[in-house]
Image (tube, rainbow, N blue to C red; front, side):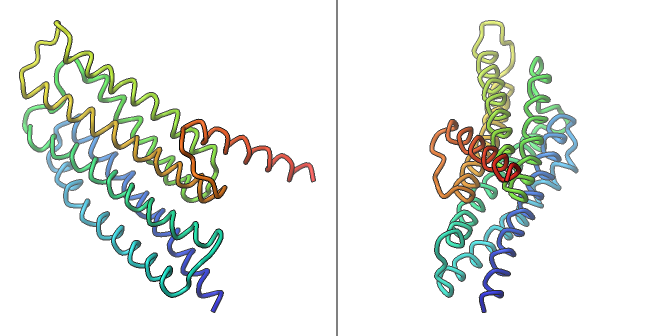
Length: 236
């Protein structure tokens, strides 16, 4: 009976990784469609979001069933609680990818990226893709150094997000109203995508340590503790 229970927990964690992998593919396609006005690729992202949503719902149902039937405690309980909360964040990350793709489709055949901001959005897209891939690996390994990597990349996205607003609010901005709206929305979607990834990273810290990472500094402290523990284990 205990073996079946642990298999259920392992399956729950595997489902999280599966969803995270799909989210990474989704944001990669979304940012590419946004940069190139590839409407077919945008349509793929929009259609595939239903798959991410469906898997998140299935995971939640399994987690609730485990809570009801098995009444887990200690780390087992943390696994279930983390799965429930992480699935919600991953689902929202999929939504952000879909929103970016919808902008690309809306402006087709024109480019969705306003003039003067191509480099900024290209970099934001690259960072979000890197964040998504790192997040999937974090869920696989629970290596908290990856959580710190995500946090640092989010800081870079935040800086780019702020620069977009500075650009569109400056006296030199010559973009039309639609370009201004597109720029602010797209920047916000990229920024929120990264924020949700940080939220997931904090939940993985909780899973690994039993303590909630309230501030970003808490992630750094958890990384230090994990590294020290690994070093101590190696010396032993």
